[in-house]
Image (cartoon, rainbow, N blue to C red; front, top):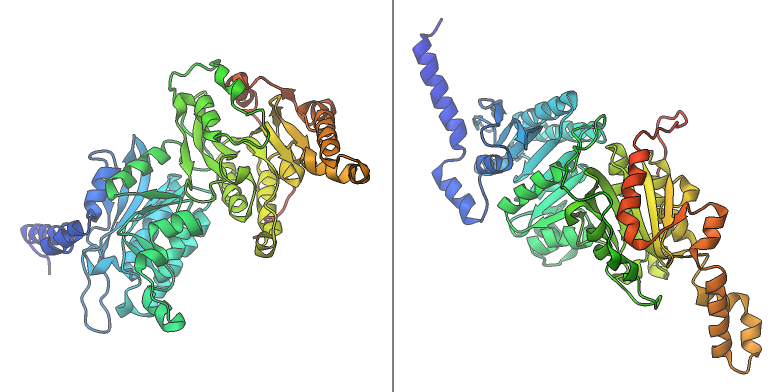
Length: 516
């Protein structure tokens, strides 16, 4: 039977109103009381005004064996919009509708926008706020997760994937954000864990809170799962907009150029005095970073995790670059397990999306000790080495001070196909530190000396002058030039300009086997 058009219109209007209303006024109020925005409010803040086009507004699940009906929208809002005029695909889970739980229809909506994002070649952003799998749907809910995981992997390295954890994210749901490129967590209402506090108590008899088990602080500072910790929904969404501006839309494009009106030939005389005369004295690497980048703008990734190495995005001459730098102010900038894994993942992301790499080196070596060795420092350090060797984007290194032993080689040296290697006059490139080297080389002479300390000091300075300087490496061609620190910005920009057309042939293979 054909229904009159006006009846169809009235039915459509009612269904749309129900879908847009979400879980109703009371549940919206409860969301606000928790300090959280609703799913639609988040979309309004993240996307350019009026740009959002929604998919599957009226889609609902088939119900379940318990007789529960489907819900319009099925607890997730999906579609596409723009951020500063650039297209993105997005899904926003609605906690006011069935707790944002994930079922069959919910998953189908997310999978549709993920498929569109890969076909069109634009970033995919997920705003996660969900009670987990919809238990009432049984195995269909588990299958729904698998469909999303599959698409996360297929989209990896094709389009940027960004996850915002703005509420609960537990059980199998955590693996989708974990496979995306960047994870934001809102401090307070958000948490991630595979097994919750109740299970932990049952199995280990340990009482632990949601926040202590999987809160933003835990994953931002200890586990490294989260890349950004933000205080609330509003700042989280603003930070996502900022991140998108540094990234290309897909792996076939380059990141957008942004002219910050910062002179390309600008110098900073203060850098000539940045490295202290005492090799054991620390300094803050961020001083150099802020000096050389356009507009002193640096978006640090995982700022609270493995703080002995710095990773993040900036611009040089308007071009987005990925920056990796040892931080002498934290653990002397040494490489350890967490620092190696953090930097390796960042290098691989930049290489996948055509973002040139700049490496600032002041590294005394790998962290010694049984804890690091037993924890797999060999395997984790090899990840960073593998990532640099595999990278085909333009790669530039500046050695500021210490570059000792294997850590010198791993930190994007000429020997692992770095394109341009500069050094400051203060650089010390050697197998090990001058004092340790002198103790080994001149061991017998020092032992027999009437004044061992003076003899050790003498040979330490002799070794430093002979070996621990950039000029021997420059003579061998391992350093392309020894530059004045004040000219670092100009030399980096000029190098990026002539490396723009870099191409590299790679041997045929399905894929390598990185030491995971």
